[in-house]
Length: 106
Image (cartoon, rainbow, N blue to C red):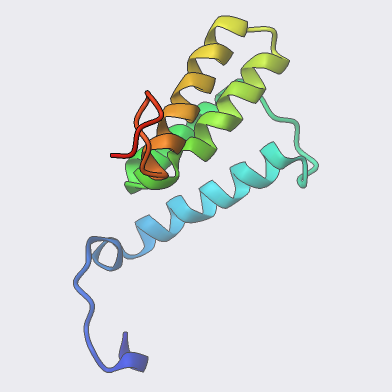
């Protein structure tokens, strides 16, 4: 970070281009899953997104990836898996919002 006149040693900066590549993949997958890309999506795209969120340590935002997984599995008629991902999305959202599974603040 020459602009700020210090050398950052956080894990993301130390990862360099590999982290940048993962972030670009996340953006590409989310655009496809949002329907803002011309390419068709599958449940595998959503599962790849979940994996990338985990790999990058985006635990506070993983509910987004789980929501995509729930939606794509619903569209594919895989309702059991859709329910599983919907529950994970709700749990992750509640934890990120400071509420446990029982609706109590943590």
